[in-house]
Image: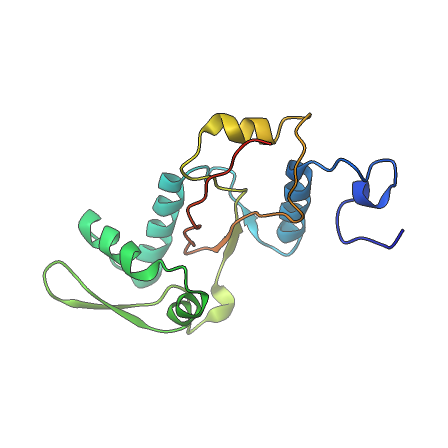
Length: 168
């Protein structure tokens, strides 16, 4: 059998038929932690992800946003278009605050790029029943996924696409 990039369970013929998705994700997270990513097990839902993003955004840009401004900011920067998202991430952007004043901001530290801090979270399931996640990672669960789908975000966050996962 050819060598595999995935956990040892995949390289053993007797174990190759069952690989838990949770094990693949744990291995993936461990590899990122070895690359100096910070693991954030406290980010478990959309609200905590957005709160983390808000804290990092406000710290980087030395600004405090009103709740209405933050909601508009998210609406402006979140896009399914990878090209647009990458462009927004790599440049200075402009946002009009509630009082009409402009706010020039960045999503990462562009000046001192080596000071950016990267974080990894476990899969974040949005618009799904929490019991489904528990079932998916139960010891008897079988996954049809061919690759880990852990969502990564920089220290300034990345809102995951809204997905609905069904238990397998």
